[in-house]
Image (cartoon, rainbow, N blue to C red; front, top):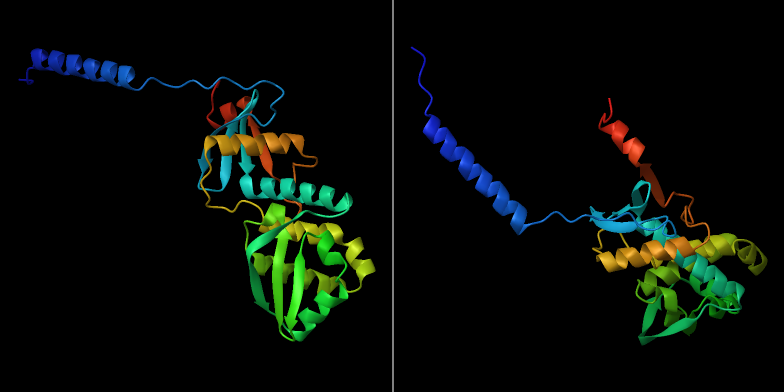
Length: 232
């Protein structure tokens, strides 16, 4: 004979499960994020993915932002605007940095002596193989000053004379912007993510970083529906 079902036991389990579902719903109500207004095309931030991407919701669907590439473009445009206005504002270091340099690097510093202040640097030669870094661009003050100076030196040595440097100033500023941009792995608060998205919306050419990589992509709700075979 087939085993008899314990209907009483089943009823008890169903009742217990119903109470669990009700308790969970009351304890942790689901938060609903309303679509942002159309004047925020990059949307409202929802979360950060792997310390690299910002996930945001706009009126059309999902926006994914490469936070380093996006911040690099913002920093570059600010540096370029400041340089075009005459000079990039520098910020003195609390303790001047002593930097060992080669004879070739020292010669490059002296060759472009008039350029350094316009880029926001205050450098002084301390000896045949030593350089003092007393001031760096204010926009990049939180970065690695030694690495920044060495990279600018490398760019200057590559381009040679001052006339060529001026022709390649955007490449020089792009390299500087990369140093001052938020790095992958840094955890941002929702407020910081929102500020970055709003800065992107106010920045020209914010769809690409200075190296030509895209800074964000959008997946519409229709595209997401197709991924999950909804509506079929």
